[in-house]
Image (tube, rainbow over all chains, first blue to last red; front, top):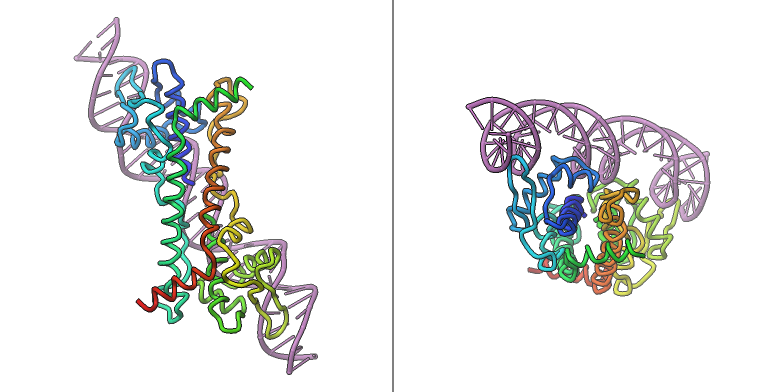
Length: 141
Length: 141
DNA sequence: CCAACTGTAACTGATATTATTACAGTAACC
DNA sequence: GGTTACTGTAATAATATCAGTTACAGTTGG
């Protein structure tokens, strides 16, 4: 899995956890344990997909623009990690003379497409709000 | 996804396709388009899990030791790619003072465990025999 | 014994991932 | 209107992961 997915989910959960729903890239970065540039890149993508609003300039930052319970991990997955299941490496070669070697890539690809859909369905069942609840539950325990 | 999974599936399908169910690491490697050492490493793992028999020495190689329809992709997945879904990179830090940062890794991990199970269930529905059928169907088309 | 294999380890090179630096653009605030 | 605190993005550097290669010991059939 793409680690940008992890950063995105963490960031959204953090925003949901903040009383005012806001944070700057620097605050998020230190919470996630990465650098602000990476956070901004991810957040920029989340903005384009309508999950957050950004305010540039002094006192700016990111703000959740949807209810935490209305955003599923599948939404996030689609936005920045769809299709990441299939390995970059590809076996066989369409030009080869062997039935197996020449058709494996296609068949393997369809298998991974199915897997991707399956994964998406699973992520559909988990919202940012639920993630936050789970975290709070863990903290109480 | 681990690309060794791809090599393993391709190799098993190739063996299933062979009339005598046999091939050497060199034959498999050229069919898969990789090098024999990598193939041997993967096959060694498949042997330890009872999917193939190997014969060392002259005229040796690998041979399917189960019916192609009795081996699912989930079996292969468990053997050499289980848990590969979760990214190596991990957000947050258990030592931090923030509820979100300190518990995110745990919660994220449980999410990926669930995803892994989901994926495994999907792979359970596909056998090596079916992969070969799909390939043959594509070849006829 | 020789030829043809597997099993592994060690090394090298290629590729992908993450962090850093740099800087232009924007908005609040004095 | 200038200064400060932000985002957006590109370019580069550092690091980690992955794949290919070489080397060699062990096994087996002829």
